[in-house]
Length: 279
Image (tube, rainbow, N blue to C red; front, side, top):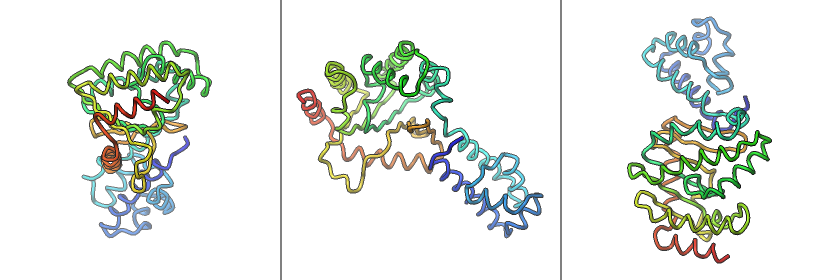
């Protein structure tokens, strides 16, 4: 499976944890390999993030270091790495509707949603026609089976969560999103009007980063979602990335805070949307 830079970095971080475990217990790589019955090169590949570490490998590593109590935490970290990167062709192999349905349990149990977008209006804020246009383009670009209408119905059902007072939504959009054409002008006009309606919901906070904001410290980044401050999902060109490692989740939380501080809220949001409607 192809890997992303995040996968490589996560494997390297795990490898460094294993190296520290070895060094803290006074073992050289050669001695660890001897105790485990491995080639020394295996230790080097794992410690430098060039190879994954299986649960069996991690248990043997921890046992050789006399640190069996740390094995399960390390195994959980390794499992998170292996499931974090899912190619679109795998996720959407049976069509767009199953891909939409796949994430619904996560959405159902999440209470606190945070989302940043520099590309498109986020799913919960989309009109049905905007969603249809987006999903049709994905189907054509990825040459998928034509189940767009079923996928739209699933997305619309999920959008009803926006009206659940037990759930909180915070969105930060780049102003450019308001001007990015998705379909005919009528689709965009309807979408921007819908955005205004969503912005007044009591459990929804929408911030927009003006195009003239100073971005020297906080440049635009990839679109991402944060679920209950425990999981991050990122839509890459080739894959769907899931981040659960606390250190990485915190990086996204920090960026979301900084992006929120750059954004305007309240009345200025309506002014920016009105400007886009007149464009």
